[in-house]
Amino acid sequence: MWPIPTGGTDAVVTTVGSHFERVPPQREKVAPSVCGREGARIAVRERPATTSDMTTPPEKAPDAVSSTSSATEENDDDTDNELISAYVDVSSDYESDNDETGKSSAAAMKFAISAAAFHAKSTDASTAGAHSSALNLNATLQPSASKTNPWQPNVCEYEETTPQCRLRVKRDIMDLLNDPPPGVYVVPAEHNITVMDALVLGPDDTPYEGGFFHFVIQCPPDYPIKPPRVRFMTTGYGCVRFNPNLYECGKVCLSILGTWTGPAWSPAQCIASVLLSIQSLLCENPYHNEPGYETERRPGDSKRYNLIVQHETIRVAVCDAIEACLNGSSTCPAPLREVMLKTFPDYYDKYEAVVVSNKDLTGMFMEDPFGAKRGQFQYKTLLERLQALKGRVQEWLNATRERSE
Image 1 (cartoon, rainbow, N blue to C red):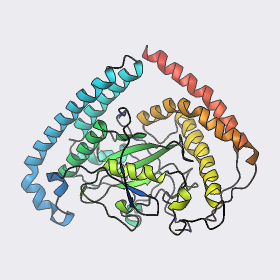
Image 2: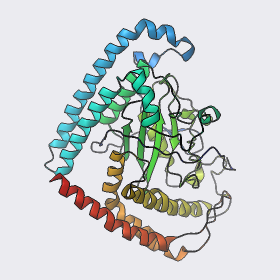
Image 3: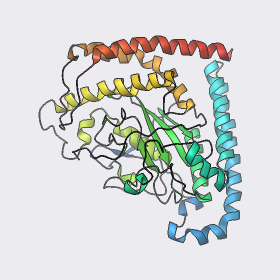
Image 4: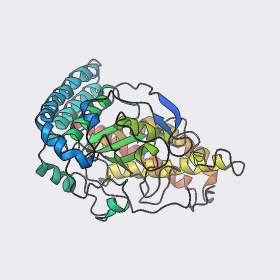
């Protein structure tokens, strides 16, 4: 699908959200069916159909909403109680571990669920305010961006949510809390639960390993009839394409999002389905995700592409991301920044091993098999940045520990 399409620069996000820690990882089943480009899989995480799944399409919504509004609000209250009950069950697992991490995770989850339950019931007026304060994209997105690119989360414009949408999103979040996918974190906006930030950790044994990949998700008023809108934020200021499915303009190319041909979105799918499908794109050989490239055009193309992706992951999705967290310029909300800073030491040895093993490539030009201009490998500089970040992150961890005592 080259040449690379255009569509804007990185958006600036100033989300204030709640922290969702994940419970011990459980391997998620992924269907072998192809979604979007070759190699992208549809995650099998479907929830049982409910009344909210059968939301009337937009053109018929007014009558449906007016006739069932009281019942929906009652369902909202029930779901709030379910969210709080979910906290009691999940947090007890954390608190059973006699370590500081478990206790802080449980406390964070309690705050997260309480905030989600409370803020999702905000009035239309407070919801309108969320578009200007929770996710301020006005600095980098033109007002007509969502009209030009329907995949864009149009959080810089007013869009009234619906009770059915909010109810379903809350249930999706509760499902994520009860059965969280490994390496996936979600933080809803403070005043609008239908807008959220997500962090996907690069899977092990892939060129994305240990990378921190940030996404903004917005569920439209007719969700789950229509899929969420998703924007990829980790693009090196609109300059880096990490995958044939992840454009530097922020577009995520998946058929379930309506951005590519193939299996379409189903109301039985959920936010977890989207995140797992995105995570499956971060695979061992992303070169083959491009249609028509099931076999290499030139011997060694897949390896050359992996070298580029691995270098850019450490440069942009690790070094740039961690530096932004420490400098206060990160577009991620505070809970996701905390996850990144606490995860960085766990992967540090792997980062350094990759950089040291490829140090001889420093100064050589990257050969992108798709013809994109990539610049030069900077492994010597990356090693210096990683070593400096190691000390700074340790200082942050020490300071955080002292404040908690």
